[in-house]
Length: 231
View 1 (cartoon, one colour):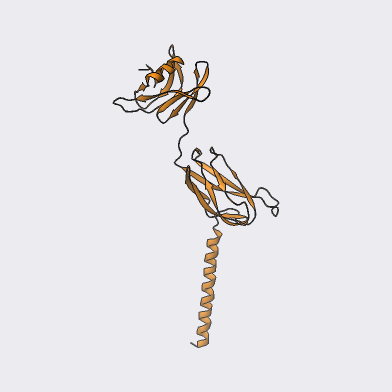
View 2 (view 1 turned 90 degrees about the horizontal axis):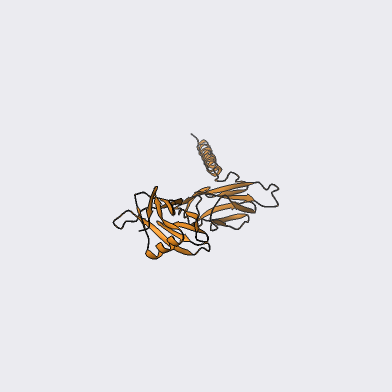
């Protein structure tokens, strides 16, 4: 084999290798996280964030943009971003009191260079460690309407002005607090707070709070369908 033909074979091999590598790299770049990579692209299109926390996500926008939030429950859920074309790390915030399990951040192109106002894509956030919203119930009290709110395994009665008046809990015996879920008001000659529990539990209440409850027309609780007076 001549030196010349050997050189040509080596050159052809190098060109072929470069071609294959270019094709491979090109295929990798084709897998953009956005469905509109000619307008904007994301480092991630689906992320998980704990309630009360935030996460940075890489974003590249070819044009100026804006964003809108899908269904959410917290004012602390929002996006920190520049709204301008270029590369940046946006910060997605999830409010501590967010109760939606999936929050969508919709990014729309908002630039005079793009006539259409419907060019958009989104990032979906799986919200983790959600704190359940407190159970709240409007209930009749002396002179008007109050609110019974469950906080943990304690039920608190508030007046119309939102001032706490009295509270109670349930016990399953031996000093062990029982689970509690408020359902409404039942009547058995007097009003009783209708609640459910994981056990055949009994009410626990202080003497001062008992006096407040009686003054507002409540003789006790109805636990899993059983009427039980205040002790």
